[in-house]
Length: 370
Image 1 (spheres, one colour):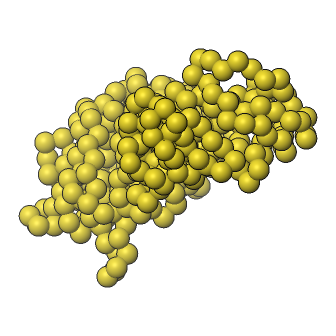
Image 2: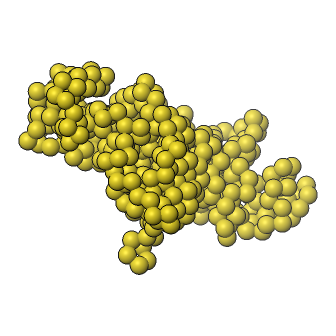
Image 3: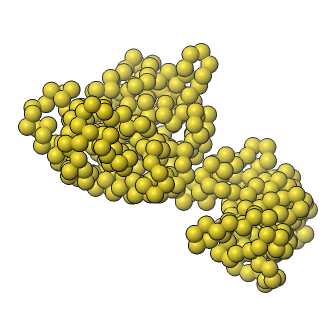
C-alpha cells in the first residue's frame, strides 16, 4: 500500500484553460478517496495526472516515496512504470476478445509467462465473482459483469493504486447500489489505495473514507463524508453534496432581540450562533430538507426545533418510506423530507432544527456557523 500526494499541482491546457489550479491533496495509504465535482471541473484530469496520462504544468506528483512528475525538476515517469490500475467510465473492454483475454491483456503487454498469466487471471476472476464468464465475450455479459471485468483487468497487474473514473455511470439505479457495495468490499479486502471520481453524492457518501470536492480545478474541501455533508466549507459544497434550502437574509438587532430576517422566515438568534454571526448584516441561512419538521397542528417547540411560521403544501410525493414535500412560505419555497404525508394545499406549521442550521457569508459564500 502507498500514499498518493499531489503537491501544488496545476494543469493548463492550451494558453488559458486551467483544469487543475494549485491542487494540494494527499490520499493516505489504503484509503478510499472520492473526488467530487461537476462535469468539466478537473476530476478526470486529476486522475490522468496521477496515472501519467497527462503531465502537470506545475507542481509535483508522488506515489509512495517516488516522485513521478515534476515539471520544474524535469521528472516524468511514464504510465507503464507507475504501477497504477485504471477503470474508465465506459470500461473500454475489447469486444473481439473473450473475458479471459481482456483481463490478461496488461500482463501480456508485460510479456509475463503464460502460466503466471493464467494463475493471476483465474485468481482475480474468483475474487471478483466472474470466474464462470472467462470464456464469454463482453457482449454476452450484463452491465455489472462488464464492470467487474474492467476492474479485474485493472487489478490483475497488482497495482499500487487503483483509479476509477465514474465507474457506475453506465449502470441502472438498482445495479449501482450492488456495484458500490461490491467495489467497497473489494477495496477493503485488498487494502489498495483508491481514488474514484464522480459527480454523484450517493457514490461519495457511501464509498468514501474521505471526500475531496473540486470546483473549477480548485479543491474546495477535503474531509470525512459526515464532515463534508454536515459542515460544508461553502455554499457550493453544501449544494453539491446534497439538497439544501438556502434563504438570503440579514441579522437584525443585537442581544436578546436579535433575529435572522429572511423576509417570510424570521428566526430569533442567541448564544453561540449570534456570537458567530457577529456584526455581519447579510447572510444566507442553509437547512437540509431532513432538518425541517411540518405539522398541521401547532407543536410545542423543543429538541432544538423552533417555529419559523406557516406555509402551504404545493407538492407531496411518496418516495419509499418517506415523503418529499414542497412548502411555500410567501416568496420562499422549502424542500422537506417528512415521515408524514400531506395533501396539496394543506396549511402547515414549519419548524427548523436549529442544531442543524448553517449560516454562510453572503459575499464570500463561506460557512460562518454550522
